[in-house]
Image: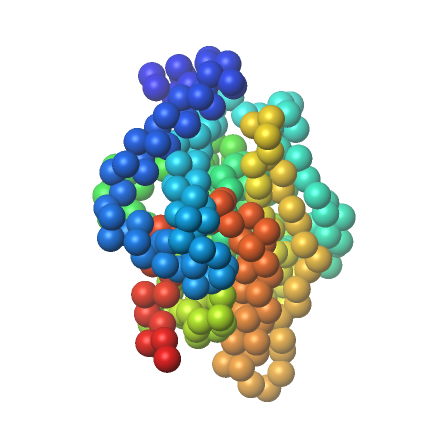
Length: 281
């Protein structure tokens, strides 16, 4: 019912409701989490506390509009998606796919990443997204139902065979690679600090010889979004597999960092990105 209501509301009214909801989110975020985010912003972006606080708040309040927009997924289709999602660097995607090996979309929790997947899929590019299974089964099912509304395939991050199959079929595989990877990641530089980083994009790119396209989405003032596709990155393929993965992951992470520097208020700063990093000297 809530989803139907959001779909019927004028865009301006829904955005207004999203702003109010976002303010509520910011109010209920624990102070400890806010302090962590502000500290990471100060360290990473070399800004003062006031500016860091503003970025932290903006990066949180935007979730209000993002959630309401996700609830509107039922109304997006192949005929109207261009009203909501625009593309820059479209040629990089078509060039990458011309090799017949599919393509890996390496992205981050910046902007409305759910609209990124929907925009690509509804624009005629079959896409599978790699996701973390939620601990709450009902929530996991709900989120994935909305993802599938646009035609996206959902693959859990433990299903490596499924990922390889997608690439073998020449399709797109989207991987978010900007969150702490615990002991499963590789340590690379991110905003001047070592960070445990998911290695899946680099490992699959190396294994299959698949191009990796750093791809991001940003919000526009009119409520639409722009998907920015970068030139393909080809994974290193030498005799040293481990070093190849680190090298490629570092290259991709540097591109992600630059995007965040360009649009710092759109990244998920509340995440404890450096949780498993070595202590700072």
